[in-house]
Image 1 (cartoon, rainbow, N blue to C red):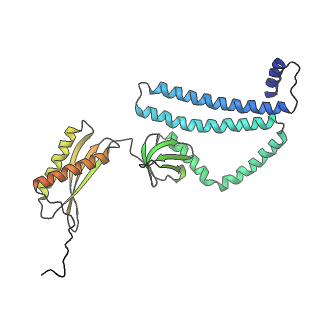
Image 2: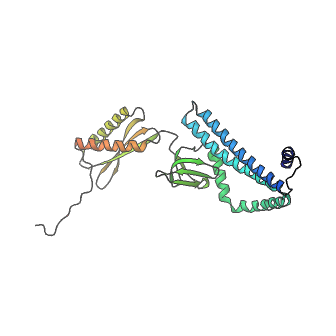
Image 3: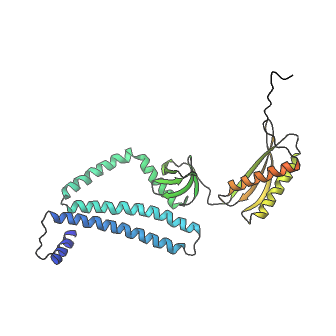
Length: 287
């Protein structure tokens, strides 16, 4: 097919067909590579247009789904296009016999790789289930194994996660035995505060609830349903009290920090002691 196209071009531009025979296969190969690049570029443009169309009047979650699917589609397109292009280039260069031998060896090697590359197969199979079960999307904040951060790319083999310091972590899908996604549902912030044994527990719990309710009123709907869990631990030096409060996803750390600050200030104003370690130094010279 490529020889026919090249012959037509040569007949039009060079009526006497002055190109040497050895140059024609090289031009064929160059045309094939150029066509492959154009197909990949066209796929990228099509995905970008689809994303822009979907983004108009859509929710943020819909855009993340397009980014996720687009990332996987482009990976598959690149693999397929370059496989076909390399096969066509080998044919254009007249290496059909070599190509047949390579494919035969590849078939035998594929059987061996199936046994030796079980982790790769596991990564791909897990990636397929992640994609079709909609477990994670680009932009989600997740914990995958020991890595926590924002998902920036998803392929059939790996998850790319940007950590809180900006580090990029590439996690093989097969290594993700437990995936915790913080971006899908509302979250419960847990506020634990320790008070002295001599303090009034009921009074302290009432003050914590008052601060929780005041925060809900000022949050504009981002926090809701404050509740007192009561005394959760009797430690050596303090009584640990707990309050829970519902919050929007990805805001629980900020809410916990703010409520810890408010409760500490309220306890100080009400005379409820929060115990802390005190260091007493005794001098041998003291009389």
